[in-house]
Length: 210
Image (tube, rainbow, N blue to C red; front, side):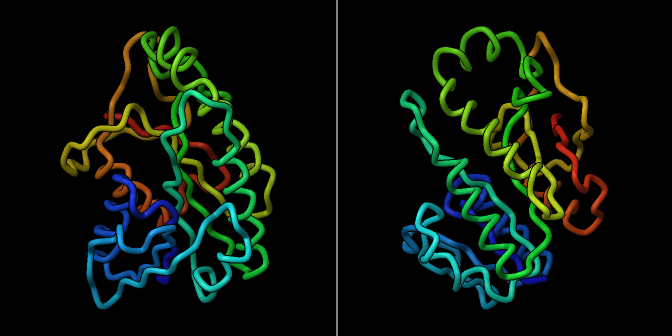
């Protein structure tokens, strides 16, 4: 397939690029700074663009079969709309280019998975560090859910840099109210690429944890 990866310079995005190429897909990475994409491959193309600037997106979206988003940022302590605004522009550009399949990472602890990231996140990390980030992720999810795309929202537990083990659990109601469940970025990428083919969780938000 021809896949466009948003957030391909981040840690999870790099795993999507690597594993997507290993599976034989043709990968396009949209990047504000193309020099951050260190991987080189005959089936990899990098296009400069910014999800907050709609007119920079068109070239990257043309001819794609699906879009996978690992969009994120590190502006945790200030009010932000980067994720929701960026996702709104992604959805609009997909609709213009008649691309239906969209798989997007958010997080456990969002909307109807609230509190399922464990007590540490519920009582400390989210309200005192990630509040604005998670509020924007909640808006991001609602935009995706209200779109006409064939979407899947992936809600991982706490992300780690562990290896791809392919031994993880996934489902709509996973997580834990007390303990923080974890998952490696490599396994999240593996799950997203498999979901692209299986379409098991079409029009659903699915949790993934070890």
